[in-house]
View 1 (spheres, rainbow, N blue to C red):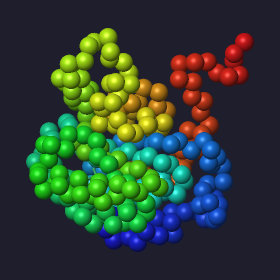
View 2 (cartoon, helix red, strand yellow):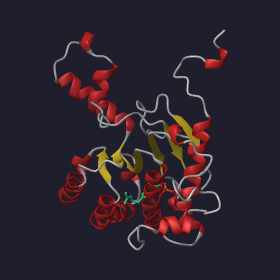
View 3 (cartoon, protein in one colour):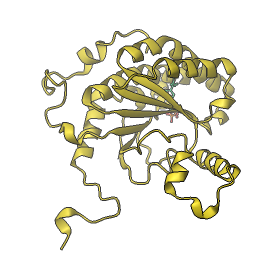
View 4 (cartoon, rainbow, N blue to C red):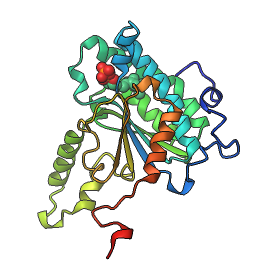
Length: 265
Ligand code: FPP
């Protein structure tokens, strides 16, 4: 994540035979149908490392490098909101050495990557429980969020210390504490109390590494999301895989509980 220049992802992964050099988009990608919000469960760093005889933390280092190129690709193909799940509220159960390693990668990445995010016009946000991270890390995350607040090209949301059930418990606690009458509670009110209150629901949720689960990710927000499961391990999930997921999304029909337009008789 720290060594590449911002054009590297383009030069090494643009597969120039298939991408329109003017729009930098895959020719089959209908820009009108690109999902507004893509959320990714970045899975498989540990297996990626094991396959190479490396320590798990080296898989997380490689996974972090990949965040940069996927963020770049998302902006390039016109995705407006990219949400990446980097650490779940259950990940504290991992060996201390691994947890400390991930926290230290995050601390370092916040320092080294904020300039680049800013340069790309990306706004950083966070969802999850920030309060139980070390005060210095909380300050660094808040600083990066403040610094990039006015950027509009892409909103990059990092789900760190995030869990969907915890988010709902937190929202219910807030709502009860506000003393509102039960009959005044509706879906919009619940949404206003979620971490994602300023984000649209994800149109597409991608999980890498061949696991077919949501594992407590965006439980409320993902009610109508399209799901895309990809066997590739996160560090190897390249621009071409993101484009493939988006292409497949553009070919699906979303009905939101209704019926198909072509099936209305
Ligand atoms: C899953 O791989 C991935 C994670 C637990 C977290 C992802 C973390 C990073 C990309 C690095 C730190 C994040 C930032 C934002 C700097 P896994 O360990 O579950 O892989 P496995 O299932 O193969 O064991």
